[in-house]
View 1: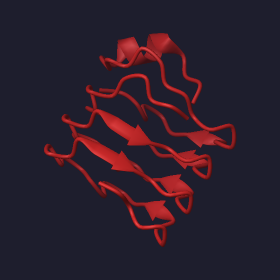
View 2: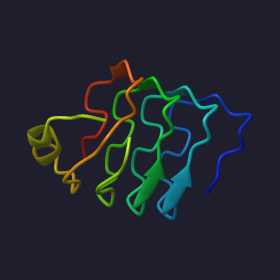
View 3: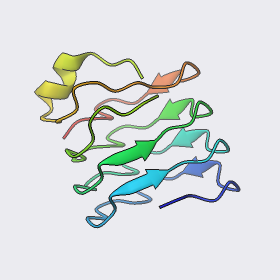
View 4: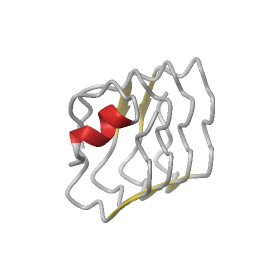
Length: 106
């Protein structure tokens, strides 16, 4: 799925529990990802986070166990394993100033 470049925020639970969502590309216009925005998207294996994203809400990617080796964050690996995620490395753009609690748990 490709989000139009007129979108600036992915809101609260915008894609919550979209089990068929496998890939999503966020445009440079997106500045924030809300709480639980992609929670429960168990089939999600690819997401492109632009450098424009400066805030990722609580539980934003909870249950997205298919995500691995995404580009764009620096996160302590032990947290990923603690919460059961399958990702071995995730990168977040340099401009990110806020990542909510349990954003990548699941």
